[in-house]
Amino acid sequence: MRFRFLWQLIAGFLLVMLVTLALSASRISNYMNQQIHSEVETRLLNYGSNIVSNNFSREDIKKVDQLLASDNISIQVYLANGSIIYPTYRQEYRANLTDSELRAIRQGQNLPLRVTYRPDKGKITRLATVYLPLNRQASDSAQFPAGFISLSEPIENLETRQQEVYNNIIFSFGIATAIGLAISVAYALFQTRKIRRLQQATRQITAGNYDVQLDISNKSRDEFGDLAHDFQVMTDSLAKSREEIKRQETLRRQFMMDAAHEMRTPLTTMSGVIEGLQYDIFPEPQRKRSLELLATETQRLIRLVNENLDYEKIRTNQISLNKQTLKAYDLLCQIRTQLTAKAQEKGDRIVLDAPEDLLIYGDRDRLVQIIINLVTNAIQFSENSDITLWGRQDGNFTELRIMDQGIGIDAKQIEDIWERFYKVDISRKNTKFGESGIGLAVVKSLVEAHGGTIRVESELGQGSTFIIRLPLEATESGDQDQAQETAPNKSKKNLGTFLIGNKKAKSEDK
Image (cartoon, rainbow, N blue to C red; front, side, top):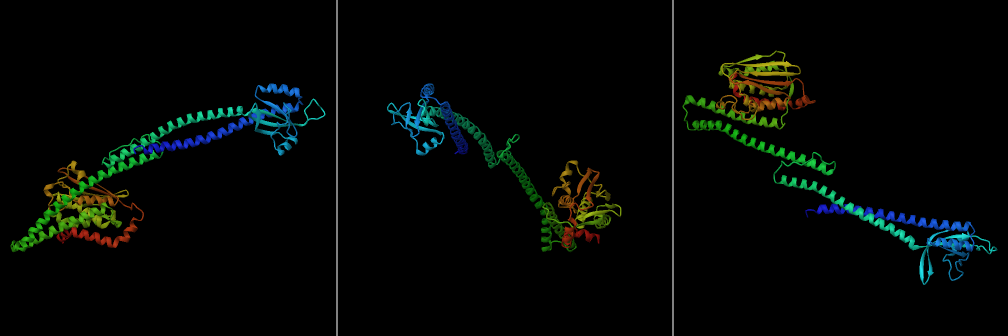
């Protein structure tokens, strides 16, 4: 049921409260009864002690008896054997005491308060009675002989006072129960309201609404408050996950479309060339050119696949880097020599501006991949201009710049160029260099994997400058040791990937 927990909570509170109140009432009742009993006993013993200590005569006792009658207290005098001698000598009325109690009185001991029974006008009266020893000389006829006296008070007086205590306790018990019930209901409603809010929020999340917000600004410092806070954290995480899933799904769809588009052109070209060769459509002078075109498109597909594989490995931290300190000048010289022929095809010139003692820290193959991608990109969008490879040491960083005088990049497009398959110039997407449109995404991921940064400064019609900053030392302890362990195999793999993607460039340089 909807309010089952509410009633269970109320019942639990009430049960605990009632048990506590019952135990408290019982203890209070027992204590008050003991106090009343002790008070009556003390009062009767005090009266009796005064009578015994003053050696009252029969006439004196009569007067005292008359005075105490107003308080419903009666006096009786007994012989040592228990026979009554005051106020009557009727022997059938005896003290109902055991032999041991009579011996105790003869030894001078008082008997504490007890309930006794006395016939009175055809009925039995219950009395609260105490006994005190009376040691007298029998020779004095005015005095009572040795024996004991008793002082009694109707038990109804004692029971009346006890009943008053019971009534007060019951009244207090009822008031406490009512107050406790009200508090229990209020507290249960307060707690169940928190649970209902969580329940409603859970239903909204089940329905797909991850934007639910719980009011936890003034949350109570209890388990429910902590639960509400954790629930809100979970909800926010689910909302972020949903948005990330949507974003990833959008990227996946876009990637599939872009990859299919990028692959369609070389595959169409290759299919046409193969069909032409199969049916001898091409004349003999064009066969060699057709084979070269087929090899170029094959390399283009291989490069596209390898770049995407590299990007995914870097993005998911599945790549290890063999970092070491290298001579940046020699590295830049090698790249300039390797790409000079490609630059000359566009009328470009590669210029090196770096000190010979310039150092750089990183994985050699991946650094080559980064710089070749950037230089190739500069060649693609430049004609009859200089492409400068600039390098300097800046504190604990090595700064490299690849500067061109090409078409430049619009300011609105600068942030988008790092996305896979993004094209600054759609009309050139199938040109000879950098066809896949993924090179810059790989470059950015590799730079960040080295613990560095990359940014671009560009103006339309003025050219672009890509700025790379890499630390000169390892950012993590043990970085270099790990790299050395994986260096032999990994270096071959990286170098092989690089050689496959740049096979045509090397052949042209030769």
